[in-house]
Structure formats: C-alpha cells, structure tokens
Amino acid sequence: MDAVLHSACVRRAHTMSSAEVVAAAAGFVDRTLQNEGAWYRADDVEGRLGGGLTSYGSSVGAVRGTIRDALRKYKDFDHDDVVQLASALWGQPRPGSRAVYERRLAAIVLLQTKVALLRHSDLTRIEGFLRSAGTRELVDPLLADVVAPFLARLTGRDRQRASVVLARWRTDPDLQLRNAAAFLEPQPTAQAPPQGDIRERSL
Image (cartoon, rainbow, N blue to C red):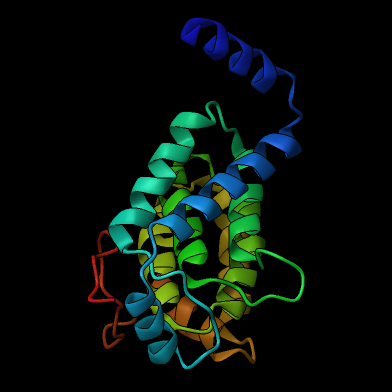
C-alpha cells in the first residue's frame, strides 16, 4: 500500500502546474515553521525587532531544516520556481497579516542554497527585499550569503548589467540600498556585515 500511495503522490506532483507546486511548497514551509515555533522565542524576536515583523518563534536551525526538507519534497525546482517561492515566503502569509521573520529568513536560506540559479535580473527582486527587510538581521545574511557570492560569479555583460544596478543603489534615497552598495563594492574603510552562514542566534 505504501508503494501505491507513493506512486500516486508522484503522479499527482507531475500533474501540478509550477504555480501549484510553489504554493504547495510555501504552505509546507509555513506549516512546518509554525509547528517548530516556541512562544518565548517569538516574544523575544518581536520585541527585538520592534514589532515590524511577527514571529513564529522557530530557531534558525529549524528554518534551515525546513528548507532542506522542502527541496527534498518538491524536487527539480528551476530558477522561476526558486524566486517565486522566495517571494511568496517574503510576503504576508495571508492578506492583512504581517510578514513573518522566520518566513523571510527561510527565503534567504532558499536563495543561498540555490544561489547558482540566480541571474543578474534577480537583483530587482532582491532590491525589493532589501527595501522592505526592516532589520539588519535579514539584510546582513541576504547581502553576505546571497548577493555577494551571486555577484562574484557573474562575468561579462551580466556583470556589467549588475554594476549598473549597484551604481544606482549608491545614490538611492533609501539608506539600506546605499549601505548595500557600499558593502558589495567595499572601500578601504567600509564596515562589512558578518560573513558566512546564517548563525544560530539566541532567539
């Protein structure tokens, strides 16, 4: 019976549209993060972030594990699937609700995991993430773990196009974008955010 059920699930997955697969993956991530949450961590996160974002109280380890499980469950994500899922997680879980810190962190982990798929045109989407992040706890890993390694592998025309975007960021009224440009094209005295993997925090 297990083999029959597995075969039926595989057939169903193959008949789902790309949008349906992304929506199912977003739902899986959201439910799992809520199940992994703890009220005391949620209270701490919301207090630390000043109420701009809500929190499920999931640990960073749980966020990473959830994305790993989602990519195993929903296989063969291409570029469009990845960026659409990242956008879905960055946005509100429901109309009228606040964005969720752990969902946004999950979007960053997803992009970090699939950074090899990103294109120069994705900087526009990432720009929207930077503008709306609301906290350096999201901005720093987004820059250090996604944008910097992504830009480092661009060459030729793609790198030139990305440089045009960064030049615009340097003079943007949004301080977040100006700081991002300074980090991505550092000057000798520039102060860089922490490098490396998103670290477990005392949430």
